[in-house]
Image (tube, rainbow, N blue to C red; front, side):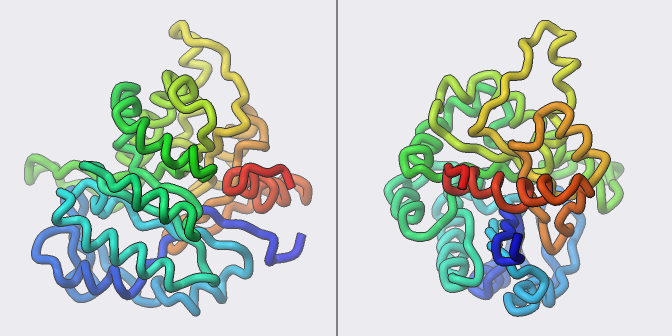
Length: 300
């Protein structure tokens, strides 16, 4: 496999347009200098080099799909407040073509489905949504119409960790890694099981991918069976990415799902591509064949 054939479906790079919009804000999500301020998480010191397109391109020669970081909470802002940030993301991401591809995003409240359809037919890889939007089967049902637009455009949905609820007491000061290790996987597990409960019945044609191995939700299938659940049925339209995980987690996911639903998503600059040491055929599947089926619905 040539380097150009490799595909990474999950990276983050903040375009200059979005950085400018975040600096203009007076309330979270906002940037003060290079410090990112969010509700629910400690201040995060951003490395400017992590958001330099040329520097990022030097790390990867293949196809890179960027996503707006859903923990920012932009998609959950009131539409009149979040619209300028969403516009900045889409304009900035589009300006980075052809070096980078990108996921589209929408407002949770009253999403503009016409504009989403336009973006999905004009260069955006698919739709990214926060895992918090799929927190229960009923929550998934409430956004089914949004996901139907994506399926109708023959584009996939990427489920990414969402914002963390603000801590309610000063005594709940937690380690800086807490959200990434506890909150994000919990959100993704809930999203995975919501999809398992009602997703395919509601959206028979949708391709969907869950970040970070769906919080390792598939590995809990034994527990699901022990509580009266049904055997896991392989679904060619459901994928998980590898972000933040490597050999141990990948071994567990492969044992449950097989290798076909697993795609490389590095989560750069917060992670690096997994190196599972499963052989050349597995590497080609993880870095090319599987992500191509996710993005384009093809086995080429």
